[in-house]
Image 1 (cartoon, one colour):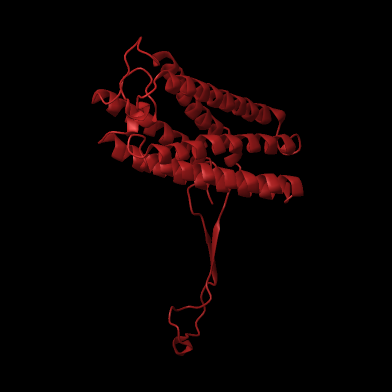
Image 2: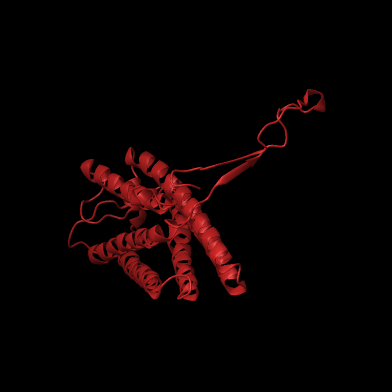
Length: 271
């Protein structure tokens, strides 16, 4: 059995690979078609102009779905391992709500482009990155309370380090964006896709875009920390048959023996 077939680690692996592929595909397409500058454009700018906009939206929606499923499995894992210990149970529920809210924000980013509905796109970015960073922080705290009995200290330190990386990227992006917008009064920066080195606002623009890519990579890196944990999860679905037919009337009842239940894996590796 390959490592990615163990348990449910295919979920975070698929989330990381698919999301990275979304960014890379959109970037390459936008640069080849000269829709953006090659030097570190905003991620949103690479999914603004057709045809990359269409594919970017679809792929990011799939990433949001994979995120929702992955976060739910994580929630169930923590719930089972901690036996609903009150403090951890509340943190676990909070983490699930924050994670799903962040995934919903990703759907907004995917379907409301920056150049068409900027404020809706901004709301999606705040939900995705702002609320998502809180999700990472909550999971780091959960990892703190789960060690040393459930896992070692190293995984907590890694998640904490990624959390610090995430917040540092957010602060850097926010400060540089404020400087950029304030240095270009009267300019609609939201629809500005091409920048000339040396022009007003260019330096804070580059710092802002680098910070955004750094922020996105911190999110991707965080879900890599789930791979080892998810290798130890096996879920199964059980079907409990109440009848041997699908009619509404009992007139069709057949008194024959049949299996009342069936347990089968939902995914490779066992669910």
